[in-house]
Length: 400
Image 1 (cartoon, rainbow, N blue to C red):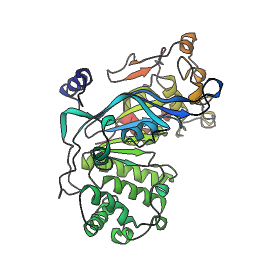
Image 2: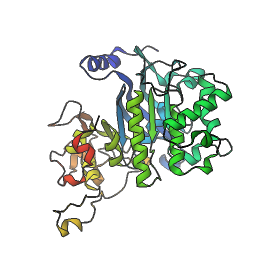
Image 3: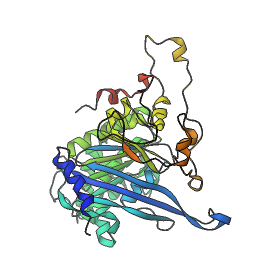
């Protein structure tokens, strides 16, 4: 597909300016869902779930998407692999420009060998892929770790068979070779006794082990981009920390890009270098991770940080330690109830008349770096009042 010059010129400028090479560029993505009775008089209509989402994922870096449930994070991720059922879903517009190659990784490459993705000057718009081309993309060049490993894994097949399935499909390995590769993958993600575990079924593993299996499956074909959708959901704190450490280590060691989706700012701070905050289907703020946590500009991001539990310290007063957590009043609006202006206006302490009448655009944030953007008429210019809410790794920068 021929991509307009305007879509690639800005990326070329960014890459030549010293920034990492672009792997994926989401430009103006619009997704809606069919509703049988939400129109005037109960008539059918399509309701917008994701509107004008744009995001750049560079080669070998980690990008986070954060927001409340219902903000459009998972819909955006599923759209990248065209996994939304159509209907009821419908992609109404935008481009998903993929700068990697669609072929398989070189055969014989060790899973432990760092390999940066092969990129090309002319991108492929993933929205134009059909049939075999789309199958070559899924699980091969772009892979995904889903939210619930127990429901994502097939209960009647062994772990080794399920990991080996992608290798048989994309790498043309036979069953025996696929099973041996599955053992290597289980060892890579830190599962003890990989040979025995490969012969077991999902119900015989713990929740943390099942999530490691999902990561092993996603890594089986050495993807250029790994999408992790709420990978720590329903895991205890200790296991959550282990999974995050595993993702960060593998992303660095294997040279792949990582798109991490979460509702937990602390999780994103642990892993990501760049963060986009979504609310009601739109990106409301986007910035380098450290800058976003230290100097948020959107009232929603500010509210999320203030709602995080405060870390007690030896010098903290009793009154400070007993202070109730701050909350953001209200809820995310329904798809059929989107306001005409700013979608956060009804929950915002800074909202004015203009906010309820005019929808803001995503634009450079005031008093911030050039890569910091905010969708707000009246951005917050003050830093968080209580820096103890800032995740420690975000305050110091992600270690190398």
